[in-house]
Length: 281
Ligand SMILES: [Zn+2]
Image 1 (cartoon, rainbow, N blue to C red):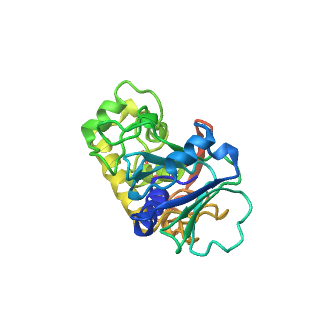
Image 2 (image 1 turned 60 degrees about the horizontal axis):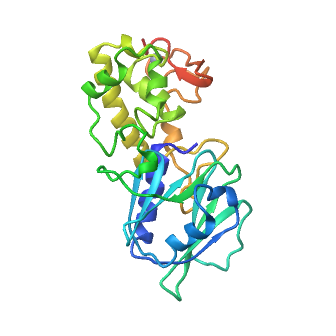
């Protein structure tokens, strides 16, 4: 599932060529991909609008239109966006939405491919003071777009008996971190992912906050992580390279690069977690 670094990679690529282009036509063939509003309304509000900016909030892409409306795109489990400079190229299987972007006659396409159809697109009903669509108002802070400090983490952890990794993945508290980066943040911070959030010391919280920023920024520089299933590809079909730098994720049984101990795998909240039993306390 794409996490913040993968979505940020796609955002940067979208911003390069989409800003200033006009939506000439919208084709929706997968009804589940546009499910929050009537299809005719979605198409009408998007057609003939020019893209003025491409933003990101957590794992959501926000396409700002020239009439102040916002197209929200969530890739979820298996969604991918593809840039197609030649509309004549055959549409691949599981393509559910196509935006034809002009101006005419030089049409390029943005294609939304999603085999498992959990992803979606919708036009927001408006943004709050932070510029966040009202539909996403229940979500927590974005650690890259907003300030994220030790006092913030202290406040989020107070009285929380959940594992620190569960807290990091709780989108109502912090947005954008998933299973891969949750493990990597705990590894760099030298904190065991199973540690109860409320039991962390101030130095540990400081290290987690610093590791969050460092890991996410490093992963953005490497254009995200593409795992063996190669499900994550960027807008131009490229693979990320951050999987080559993972400290613990997917490395169970292999030696920790810091101390040589075997990386362990456990389960937290029904999801796998990886850590070094020597380095992480
Ligand atoms: Zn170690």
